[in-house]
Image (cartoon, rainbow, N blue to C red):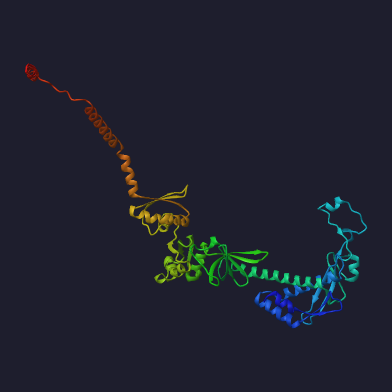
Length: 451
């Protein structure tokens, strides 16, 4: 129910002779109806609303008829609708007061150890006078004096009273919402999509608004207005605009709470989730342990024919979930965390908390995963830095290191042979000429000249 609706019917208004004065008379039936609706719909108790009404009426009375510094209280009778006003004075010791005609220096006023306060006859009453009115009165007691009954207030005072009531009820509602959702912090809550602004999804959670930031959403998910959404309640935040609930669908605890809702063994405590490594929307690894030797922890989370884990996978937009058994033995735990890859050997360095894992060549890509995802999730799950190598890679490195010299000698021999061939090609071959061939050539040249 909106405040504007019940405020319009909360009072019966009657104009008096002055145009600036309104006389208010309470409609008891309407008040009872409003109190019941506020308590049912918003969880605001009747006492809190009545307190707001009394506070508002006291403020209106003081504004219209009171004096400066006066403490006014109002007492509202819910059965008859009548209001009684009273003035309150606090019992003080004269020695602790600064009288009106007393002069005091600035040094004493600024002194933090100074406990004396300025006397105001509208607020304070001395102990001897108080004991004349009330026997056994002590310091800081309240002495109540009745005031003249008034039921007509100025327009400004009346509007102020309405604002006080509205503010008081809103504060009470905020306290009620904080108490209600504070109990569910760390649980799964649900709401309908109210609006989407700049990537932030606002969910209507009933008495509060849930905020699902972009970074807390599962990548690839799309929601429409009015669609029902489940999420993990991370924190309850109070702001001037109301109570906001910070929720998440990418939080690892969201996955844990989904399993808790599907697996009775987790609720009973026979199976326990020890660690979760999650990359929302893509893949997650969950390490579980059983406190009962007769119960398989992995099988409990998987369910018959995988029905339990498939239900959660559907909720998480097809996210793959690997369930492994947790172990105190680090070697065994890392071996399980890197599944489905088969591990040959693991070397641990306790100081650096590093594990060197050896796998066969055909298992290396499986152990690392696409984009290193499998190894990355295994490292988050175990808390160890994991280096993955294969047997083939190490044997290839040994071959390269064992035969560097023969390869160099062979290269040198090739260079020398090529050099000799080049020198032979550059040297011109020598041609031998015989004497008989020379004499025949000279006789032929003589015969040609005689002719």
